[in-house]
Length: 268
Ligand code: PEP
Image (cartoon, rainbow, N blue to C red; front, side):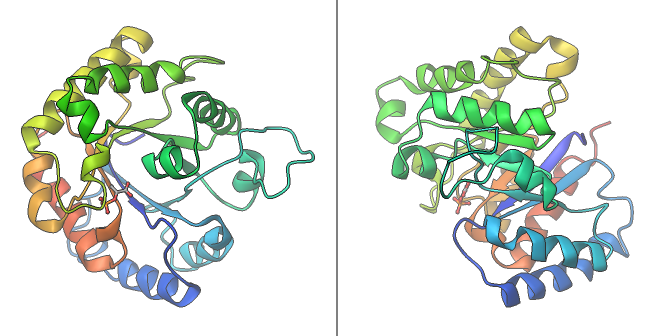
């Protein structure tokens, strides 16, 4: 896994024509041509609605983007075996159609779909079991932050995924996404993000050991835009971003990627 990562979360947006336009523009970007090598340390993942995975796979392959863009989805079933689970998609099915990563525990799923820590943990284990790399989201509400309970919430969400086979081989990422910053236009300050990332890193080091945990990218998500990305990424514990609204158009998404490349260019 590369040390830095930017993941796009399209949520329930997009159509086939939008996806094609986005990927075609993406394949023409300077970052793959004039600025060769700038993505050596930066992984990119596009997380789409599940129905578009196969179409995206064929476009990514035909545009020769396979080495530069991984394909992710936004949910997976907590059930692993095939069976009577109407409407569900198993991790094995998603892998079968060319998916490589999955967002788990996004606050919209926790809040709107009632997903508990336990459900998120089951999904995390199902993804790891088939080699779909999870992006596990954690984050506190404004009320939890203001009452001083932010770390209690986040450490509880992190502890949930320790069960089962635990953290696997560390082939996952964590996205710190304060709920009050998602889609609100109000991002966490770089210092707030840094402080929480440092605590998450220490938690992982304790559970996984220094070496393995250092390979887990910890991303910040919540109203990242081209004009605030570089300051957020300049914080040394922030290893990338999970980008919602600003990923729907390729230009702002690539500006955010360039901000990460620039912010981390001095890091060995
Ligand atoms: C997200 O969807 O995870 C997210 C961070 O959204 P936005 O960038 O729009 O705040």
